[in-house]
Image 1 (cartoon, rainbow over the protein chains, first blue to last red):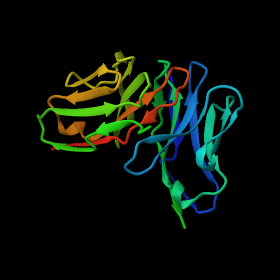
Image 2: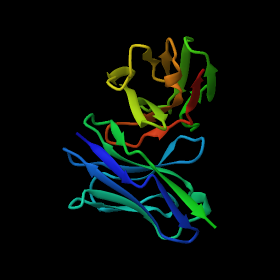
Image 3: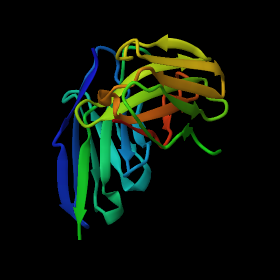
Length: 113
Length: 114
């Protein structure tokens, strides 16, 4: 069965600091991996995804993630945090049904001035 | 495109009442998903449709929940009778095809059952 573990329910950074949100996955099939962001009172929005090919994936708003098969990880990074990055971030993996996504529990990113 | 549209955005009802949540997917998308988000359980997939046909409803919590998709542009999620533990944010999402994989989420319906 597929599953996702997001380490840290809350991450706090200062504006301009590096953002690192951790995601580890378990999958019995070649994984498709996703990061979604949820701003307050809104739906989820795709940040980036890995399906095949290059393991370093670039997404919107300066975020990127690297697929590391040996570590079963797909950590999300951004070199310099902005106040507008404050949101909840969800890692997800393709489920057993081709279209099903299995989401992690989310990590709330707090950005202080 | 207007994106995925959900209505109502907020619903407050009393225990035992019927609740109907509505979703209009992005035009041309052939997959539609219903999710529930709570603090305790996170984001859970309830059911999904392909070309208006339910494919997997294993996430539907119990018989009080039902979902329909009478046509490609409309779906409903019904709870009858509602209970306080159904209080949550319900999201609808849609996607183009199996190989597209990206799901586009609506803004959600915040349901409070008193």
